[in-house]
Length: 48
Image 1 (cartoon, rainbow, N blue to C red):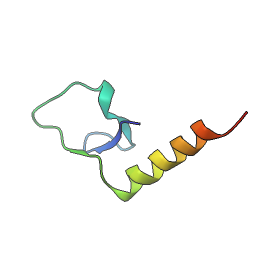
Image 2: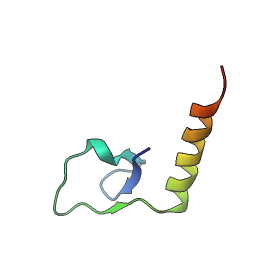
Image 3: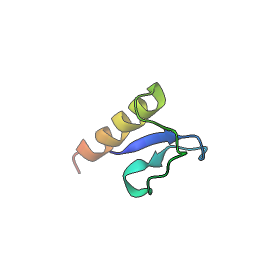
Image 4: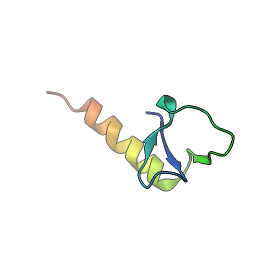
């Protein structure tokens, strides 16, 4: 659940898998990120 918005990418990215760089701008607390995290959690909790 390490989704984040980054200036270099048009879509949400898995921030925990990308290397750190000095010029990267990462936003992890936006409405879009919160909604995507909620959707991922709902999917994980769906009983099969």
